[in-house]
Amino acid sequence: MSYQQDLIICRELGERHGESRALNSLGVALQQVQRFDEAIDAHQHDLVTCRELGESHAEGRALNNLGMALQQVRRFDEAIDAHQQAAARFAELGDHHREAQALNNLGTALQQVRRFDEAIDAHQQAATRFTHLGDQHREGQALNNLGTASQQVRRFDEAIDAHQQAAARFTELGDHDGEGRALNNLGTALQQVRRFDEAIDAHQQAATRFTELGDNEGEGRALNNLGTALQQVRRFDEAIDAHQQAAARFTELGDNEGEGRALNNLGMALQQVRRFDEAIDAHQQAAARFTELGDNEGRALNNLGTALQSRGLWRGRKGKDQSDAKSDAKVRGERLVPLVEDVPSASSAVSASVATDYPSSPELPAKTEVLSLVSMDESSAQEDLQANKRWGRRRKVVDPVLSDDR
Image (cartoon, rainbow, N blue to C red; front, side, top):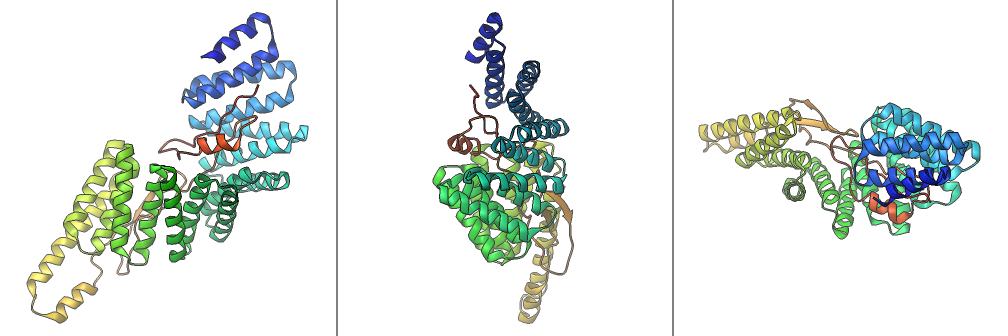
């Protein structure tokens, strides 16, 4: 790795400023190849060097990049401390652009430990700084993150407004990846306030953006969320198609968690149109995927049980009095399938079984998306787009935006 060679040369020459830059570049490169423990070590050495040199600006850069790497290995408390210190350094220096980047990253770490009110404050401050600076791209990122945090504390109207603003910023910039993510998150917020037709439109637009980009993972998420919204307005055949497409995308990617969620939702939609054999197969496959992950397969097994029960009940009642149209109509009108309702979280869905005489919900969108960690210093909009290409899967935070500071 050339950065390692640069580091060796700078140390041999006693060039401490060059050593600092080489350590930062090395840490960023290590993050790109997901060697996060080594990246943490590089950024920590850079931090020590910067402090010895009295370089406050470089110290802020090292702290922010260190926080990013710490987030990736789920050392969130340490990451929060690093991002807070970075924001403070840049505030002291009057560098509001980099202060805003650190604040936005701070908000993502705070969301991971469920300190949502503090995360909202951090993202609001970041969005305000970027607005004043005219940086629409990062303003969009901060607004989208603000929306995800607001959803977590059930401030859905504020979340909707934030996601709409974020989508508008990305649309103006022609950033279809950011636009797709903001639209998908907008759809999840609209579902929460039962504005399902608008949610359907948002998820459809998001799926289209990801399809255009060739982003199968983003497309799969949007399609799965689209299916949940379609179920809410009883457009079950369309929901089945959406969940089937979502499951196929995740299968292609080898994303067992996403595939499991899509299959579970597919089974629920199939139950609604009494295609119980297919529903049973879908729930069995979903349970298998969750088991492979060591995840709690209870939600899929619970839905499998209801499908088996409902199939038996449906067949029994049909056989009991097929000639009685009135009785058959009664059967069709009854609620036969108590299902599992999953509520969205920033990481994975939390399930709670429900048995009700009223129509129950499909598994709701499993996650909202956070955009995005920003490294110091000169990360460009194009680098942001590349880093946002994939939403981190289970146990992963987000793909950072990485750049070399030379």
